Length: 268
Image 1 (cartoon, helix red, strand yellow):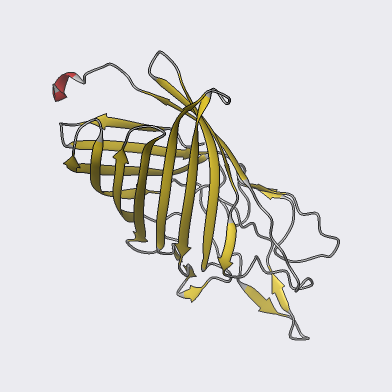
Image 2 (cartoon, one colour):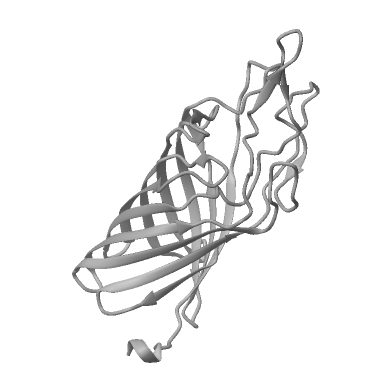
């Protein structure tokens, strides 16, 4: 869950603050033992994890560089940063020793946490056009994030690049909702533990999605979205005993957006 709040600072600037909350879980259904796969979750602490529900906090300041009015072109440029929470990994899950036979022996560990533990800078660009029916909105956005430095425990987050296309139709009577289309590409570079590249951290994902959006009379908007991520490059999580692996995934999300008729006194 990622609640966010956007505040209009002036006619040209706005600030968005978003907070990640939740639990990351894994249920391992494999028949063979592996040192990296088991049932686990992020809500409680473990030998190499500070557990909890609080994830990263993001601050983004955007400037409206182009505004053609209600119908027309709009362009935003933004800069911001990520502030980590304490709920992070405190030791690499990939550290191991060798036994007398030369086999790798891993300490007990977990892989999941709600925060990566690193401060990061972000830049984003958004172009969209409000048009006349049947397509009332389409746009392209891009973003990049990069860590300032390693976490205190030696973890370095990857560079991430995202490119997204969105489209929204007018209200369709048969659905009683507007239909949305999303095409997203995400690149993630190598993450590192103590200067060593973390296995399986680099990859590319293409995510097509469809959604429905409903608007109410009280300036609220509700959306239901289905996304089907497709791995383009990068290995799946390492399973030593199962070299032939496949990945099937989907994402289902529900969103609520509310516009408040309120002026912050000191910004008026």
